[in-house]
Length: 236
Image 1: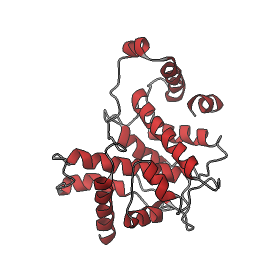
Image 2: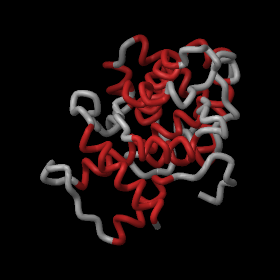
Image 3: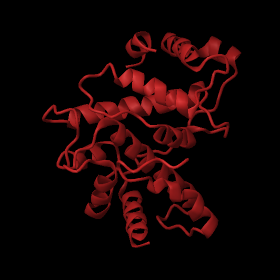
């Protein structure tokens, strides 16, 4: 309970300190009819859709398991990113955040929105890995989080390091992305509940229970419940 209170307090500090110009919690764009998409998409979007069709299959949606396979196949081509791979649990969390129509899967626009976030955060990860070790060290992390739009106080920073970094305080790529997805989703949830936009919210037990998953799990703790070259060259 003490740890939970510290985490929530830190999250509130993060939200209150975020520059509105840095964090604009727009929801994923709504799905568009295929006919509209074909008429209005750019060449780049059409290429992305073509790759997505190959990845998603006939249902044109990506499940958490499929998302895990996609991400792991792509990052396996990146020797400059150290990672032990995305888990189904972390991908389930990403799907939950981006699944605007509650299908349990990601459609084209939802997937593209998530993918753009991952690419943006990947660029931040690379630029703040100043020693080119493939991981973000504890002294590199604060600037990386700040660049992503999340200025953290020391209390919350230490909690996130304990949950997402290894024993030496290093955070690899999949944990960095998973951490930012959870921070992003908590900030979105807070902004939604902050009806008066005054930095204060009241949360009942149901709302708290529904948002408690955002705390995540410690690195190495077992999960409990809850391609290839062409895709790599087109999407990175």
